[in-house]
Image (cartoon, rainbow, N blue to C red; front, side, top):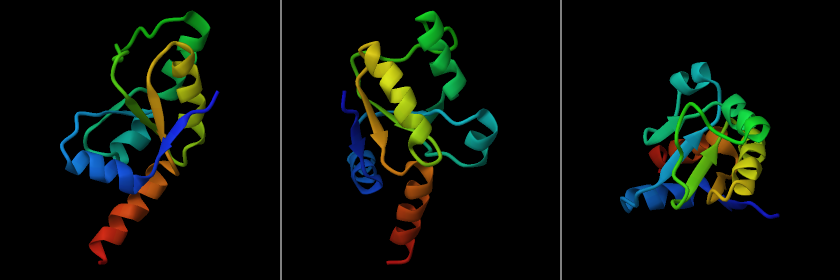
Length: 112
């Protein structure tokens, strides 16, 4: 199984194009509250790992027919969560490099 990846540049372009995307940030609430991509929603990885155990997401309903961009700090947890969601037929893509890469990309735009 191969999980699709998207670069921060590609994601930024898609957001600028006002494409309706579901951004799923799987970091814990504290990290999410410190910094997150504005359009994202927070579903901590523990909830997604719980899906693997129970077979259902109790806290939030996630759209099955729409692509979800999954992110975390560096991309590792997002990839694990994407694999679980993919097994339940969710359309998932991982933000390559996570929030760390996103911050670096956004900061490079400011320096141009």
